[in-house]
Image (cartoon, rainbow, N blue to C red; front, side):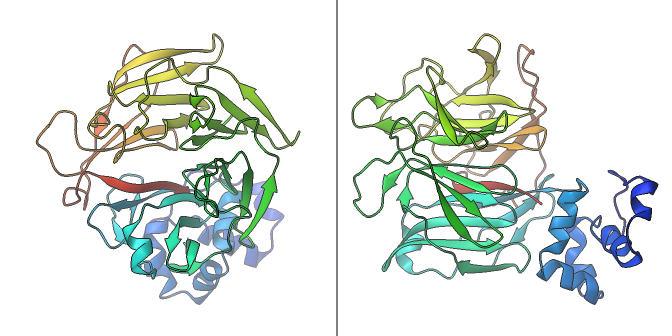
Amino acid sequence: MGVCETNKIPDTDWKAFSSKKRKDLILARVPRSEYLKLSSVNKRFLSLIKSNEIFKMRKEIGFTEQSVFILATGEENWLAFDRKFKSPRKLPILPSDFCFTSVGKESLCAGTHLLVTGKELDGFVIWTYKLATNRWFKGSSMVNPRCKFASATDGTFGYVAGGIGIESGREILGSAEKYNPDDGSWEPLPNMHKKRSSCSGCFLDDKFYVIGGRNEEEGNLRCGEAFDEEENTWELIPNMLPNVGVSEAQCPPLVAVVNNQLYYVEACENEIMVFMKKTKSWKKLGGVPVRADCNRGWGVAFKSLGNELLAIGASSDCYACHSMTVYTCFPDPEAMKLQWKLLECGGMNRLRNFIKNCCVMTA
């Protein structure tokens, strides 16, 4: 079993640690694909996983990996993939009632938690998957339970904003909240300038951005808003989305941030664009390799995967293809067209090509 040699801590830093701490930091460098093997033979490693300390140490030394969590049509279990999509793993079946299973759900990652929100017979619920224990549990409710909201993570905390209030079932919200995975709590944030539902979220320039969506007064919104945690304020940003037609039934904006650059998929034309910060304009970068245009953007995933863009769905090269395909690329905002790579993915070709939920976790 090999241990990755990247991100080494300087010798002077090692000398500052106790012998026990040095051993723990070595264990923290073990690739997550080896956790099951090592935890079965090393009690100390097992205790570090269960206490979540192993993930805290990995973050301290900058030794983290991405996992992609997917719930596809027709599947009971969520599936977890490594960054290369070579090691698929089934998560335990989420122990919800039939109502939660049959209705639409929303998901986000925060730290080592995967949160899945939806409605059970008894009302709104948040099921949380804990990476350290490989188990689902019912998490605490939001301050303002909601659906069709924007969400994003800074790697540690989760952020949600906007959406439709669950209690009223009709009210479009302008409120926002922050999730702390350490204690599972939700903290209210200041309200946005505009109420909006069916919006998208991302982190850009160390700020939580909420983009697009709809409200009752203005219909489809092109503006965005950015939350600055240090200032505890929202900034309204006009014309954040490109000036393209958006149907009422279209999915929330397909956005992803890589290397602090914002990318957007225009679903109707199956085209990808990048936001040029200096000119505050959008530049076209060619077609996206999955069929975002089939269902007005629904059923595909467009995510950031470290320093790559990730696109999952039915391939644009095969109109009759019913299985899932996965593409990645190292985006260059100065390029004329992005170069996408089709991954040979274990376990993906048997999945239907409509994704219900997809989240990326870094831990």
